Length: 393
Image (cartoon, rainbow, N blue to C red; front, side, top):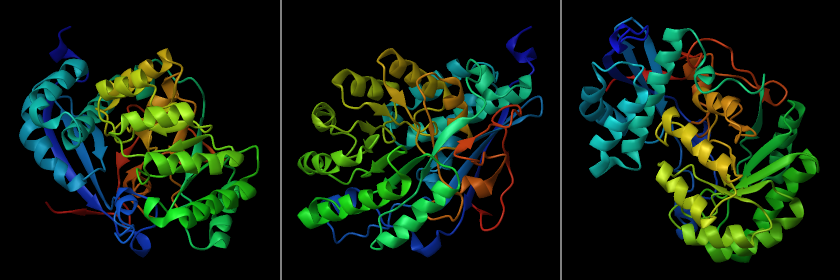
């Protein structure tokens, strides 16, 4: 049987669909690179109200689904003008070769950032199509599911001026059965020591609600510098965080290496790293204890599993950014992944919750765990419901 006789067939079409939803209350507040530089900057500016779906259709009538959230409205031009001509006509099963074609053809302008996001969306769609063609879930293509359910952490708990509101939100997730939680800081270097104390109060409030046995993580979203982070980890040590996430801007690997050596709290980052070479440099420098790629940024499933293998070789954990089915299939199959992120679908506040309204089959947590549905491919289909709507391009 030749590749063109394979049940998955060849790619006949690659198309993009753009969706959006309003974020409730105009977004949420949290530390970020703008506030870390100038506290007067708008701290509500980091939201993802638009979502891109990339559909890969095959000669056997299958449609594979991939997606992208990072600058979603800028990705279609890359997919349609640069990647689709490379992918169309190629056997679906030749995913590794197709990935190399996309990567090498875009190397001069797309090694990181939006170029890699576009490649990721196409790659995820190809894996979904292959799983559908073979009648198996993607995790079976990656070596098989290691566990019936995946432990997930409730990822929300944004910075708040009301500690009572923050405590009530944390209690809600406890009541829903979660045993792991991630919260966001709000203040950074321009806010001085007063901001440091306020950040500590955020963590103290949540720790008192979730209890000493729960895993609690905290995210600075690139909003600090090394000196500020050094001071903060000493103040935060009594609260026994499982990790401190994205304390520095992503390219400050020297700073991350120093902080990883010195901090009593494990250091995590990587959601804004886009290549296996970049993760190799993080590992070589000892610049993190937890790696956090997002499958729809790091080059898709093809590259995500390679980063997991790298982490496994060096005894590091991988906990992908943002949840979603494509990340869960990776986590379900890879030994380096102890848990996954999960955005409770109570409201669309930053956009990471939007897939719950966009995809039928997107896993929902029960008792702090998600169960993949066993359907072929990723097990999801595009079925938007209010308030998500498709927009013309």
